[in-house]
Length: 47
Image (cartoon, rainbow, N blue to C red; front, side, top):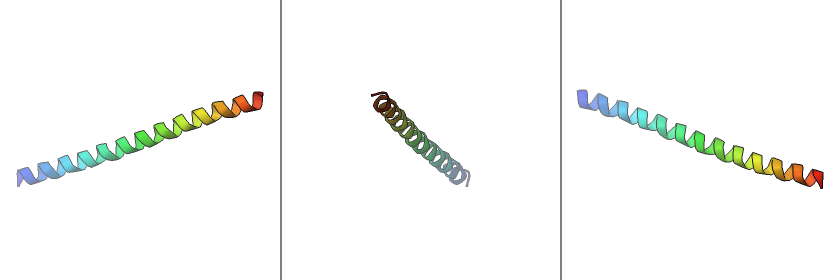
């Protein structure tokens, strides 16, 4: 019984880590794209 609850806790923890990692990756990609597009946009306006 104890092993079963431990495994369930670990599974929940891994799922939280997985979702957290996905959110971090997506947000970093969005920030990077936004930064590059913003720089390109400013550069085009200055031209």
